[in-house]
Length: 89
Ligand SMILES: [Zn+2]
Image (cartoon, rainbow, N blue to C red; front, side, top):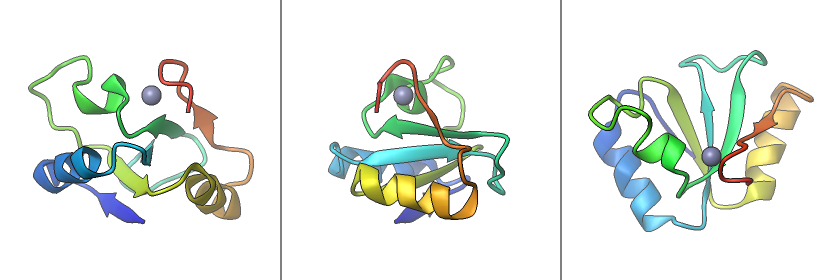
């Protein structure tokens, strides 16, 4: 697991080198109010709606496998993890 906050270059490097990985987007301090699971290639968390804006103003917690990502979220915030409707992780 790698977590990126205000570190766009290392985050972009991670998604580039882990294209089969998964990313949970959250507030800088994750809460049950917003936890969104994406594939590492999802446009929403890469280019976003504003391509020039920082990608890691929201925390990106990155995982090698979907199971690892779900376990991380469920163990701390049961039932809170949402699935992105665009990339269908
Ligand atoms: Zn997505």
